[in-house]
Image (cartoon, rainbow, N blue to C red; front, side, top):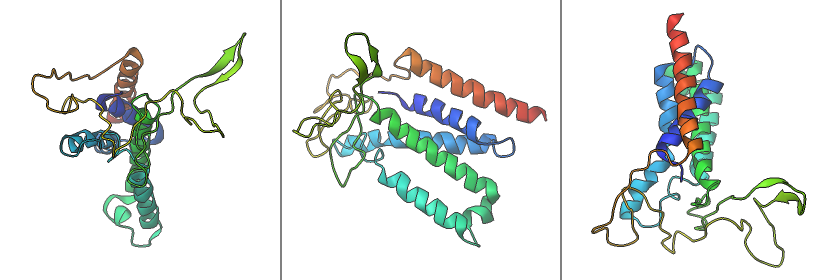
Length: 215
């Protein structure tokens, strides 16, 4: 499962890509990165309420409500965001929301999966598979396999529900049940591609801030 550090790197890349020279400041970058990390804070909630990691803050409802609120406020003549932060505040808010959505997607497109419909539906979903071509099988598309006769919509993903107490190991809650004697591993980067995302975010966003400071 990608760590919060990977989500931060991806958020930094989004900030560098979507914010122009006027909008990309250390403060706005911090806001976008914080929004990218926010979904992973449900690991803290999971310590008290078992089964809510990748559910409590990984659902679609929070970004949807925040997006509606930002749109509603931005269209008002006396917009709160604009009155405090100007047009930059609105633009940064949208990029921060995008960072939050992509952070949720990091776990949704992963075998650990996410309960994106919680609390309406407690099922964990994971979009895992491949798209390609085989000389023996032809076109390959295993991300989604609709089956009218029943079966898994996402066949290669993990399963489970929030109510069923599905456990996703974290540093704070490494084992399902008592943690006595359990080894805690804090994984910052779990694979090569994750390291590349972190480095790319740091280099691209840092480079843009450096260039901005020179002007």
